[in-house]
Image (cartoon, rainbow, N blue to C red; front, side, top):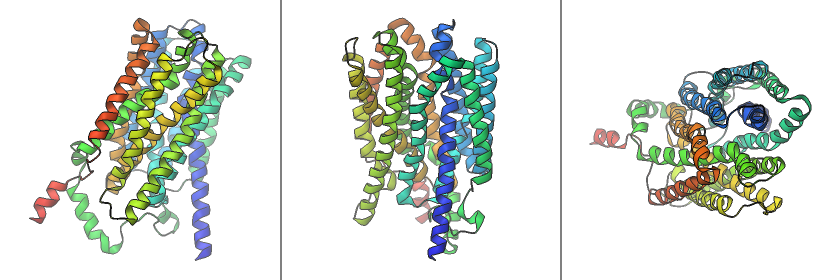
Length: 442
């Protein structure tokens, strides 16, 4: 028994490490153009054209992440994850080799975004099979933190390569790393423990013999239509959209705001972006650990809250901190503000942004029955990527007319309003198909 437990933990660790590095590579490729954007603008690319390129990727990412969530309920997560890395790396390399044309750049970055969409749904499905419910939030947050590590280190790596070898070489190397991790994913990842003869780890995913009849009944009762009409899913989707718009704006446009409107150096701008990602690592992990801790205590007590609604208060507090950080960035950062203060502000903003991002994904995935967990996450992820799309071309056009400061002020107001909505909606429960089940009992 001890040997079996050791083998399971070893396999969990190996799979998690490959997922961690693989998803960091996804993030590396996804942010490739944003990291070399100052160089592209210096070479003659217009600001609105840059917004078009970023938005083209975000649109494709939104579509493919929605489709990827649905496909993850039907296809092998290993294959989806590996092929996504392969195709994303291909698009990044071709971008680095192509002629400087806005049309070509937009098409290639659309292809990159489309390949990116299957990455996280595949990760979520593998995690739900390989970890128990009271570990799910922690390991979800740890895995999502791989993107923060990538985002924290990649600005400096990209700057070094770009300065010495040019922006094209930066993208070519990023794509090459994606090829390598694609091969690792195909070789190492296993969809679920049963595929290699290990007993199921998560009882909520694989039913026992005694539960099969009830599971079949639940499957027939709860459909994707119940997800679409659920007030709980709408609450999470709207909140996710807002926080993702704020996150994407901070990461993609924060350095431009500091350089163009606050007249800070590119180093300060890069430090801010890096500190947002670095703070996001800790914010996501802390949020996952705290909500798992709350969940364990709730399950030991008499609380009637579901797993998902028990996590909502932590997300609400972090969203409030996001609004305060955006206010500080807009009204209290100027030419004389210290580099250390700006870096610290970025770190705190990253902590507060990535906490809710991790929590909302967990809430959507765990609140739905196992046969719809990928679809549930796909719905809220689609809303999140609508936020990312809004932060691209629409915000770049808004900034062109009014400035980046007004964009961040708008985000502050919307985030504050979202906090109020979350406070009023904290009692909403994810009771999918409850009315149908009740009528059947009667």
